[in-house]
Length: 54
Image 1 (cartoon, rainbow, N blue to C red):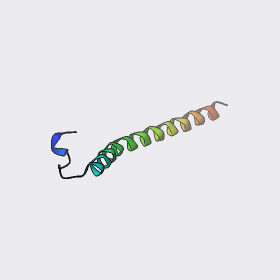
Image 2 (cartoon, one colour):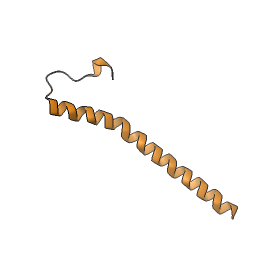
Image 3 (cartoon, rainbow, N blue to C red):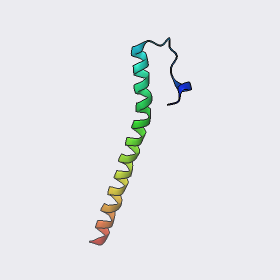
Image 4 (cartoon, rainbow, N blue to C red):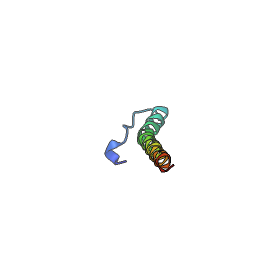
């Protein structure tokens, strides 16, 4: 993160920690979801290919 995105100094430490976790989570959650959805799509295509091969 760049310095201009840092929280102001008057935010209390607990809230600062929470907000930092929240912003990290905001990046991690969509990445995990997209990987899971991609995996699901791959599972469906391989299952479809297997059923067509029978």
